[in-house]
Length: 209
Image 1 (cartoon, rainbow, N blue to C red):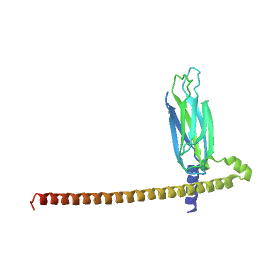
Image 2: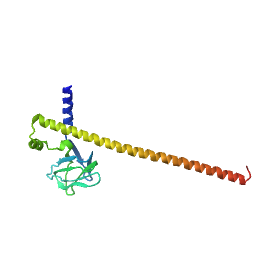
Image 3: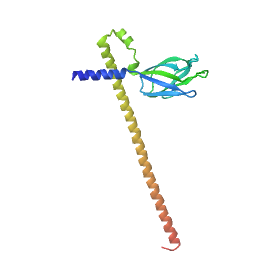
Image 4: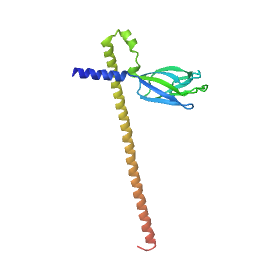
């Protein structure tokens, strides 16, 4: 049983500590974006580098812009071949990173970007933590595992809050639909009653009834 727990702990640690390496192929015109839904108070660290098959010697440059869910500008760089951005989220939602070729490029081959996107426990500088707290070997691994468990717990809390929000929205929508249905039924009944009253009055005037 103990070995099973340790094995699952190692798997969880490896899963959380892995960064997300992404390859993006940039079009000659236009923008290519990536997004990730992140809750608040999470550290985000990303490195990107341009990879080109251009044999003419003109290394292409790109521009990068990172925005928060509410449109706040978190990073902006122009005419770069590589770069890095880091921030701590203040809002929960989709964070967007967009890349496009700079206007002065004359690349004769496809241009790609290698993006190493890390969040939470994966973005933490464990070397600095180990030096500061004098952690080594199993102590450092246990500290990483503790951080991974905390990150998973925070994600579960965030997902629970999102589920509660979605349930609230669903219940509100259902209530509005129910009231709309009742109002529609009431209008139909009122119109039918008016039609019957009009027909009865019409027939009485014509002395048909």
